[in-house]
Length: 125
Image 1 (cartoon, rainbow, N blue to C red):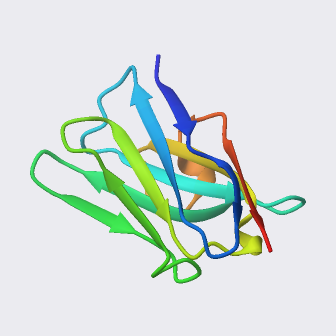
Image 2: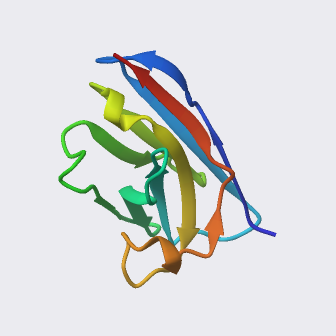
């Protein structure tokens, strides 16, 4: 059974950095995509980063809305994915979710099969 466990959320001040972790287990993820989405209060879930890897390479995707501030990476040899968030802003406040699957579009939340429980990130001004 596939499980995704997110850690690393918390309360920070504007301008701070935070790193989220997502540990995946119960499956083989090489060739799959793992991604981060966030859901601000009262808003829809939105894509913030994705990574797809094989044994020899990986490809990352980050939307323009967070490009330059957010970086997704994977711990080599594991199924742990990180989201490094820098220069955080109050509007980054959201529940952040890790997702995994084989979506045809990496930014489409409904196309992911597996989801973590989410971790809260709150950025104060």
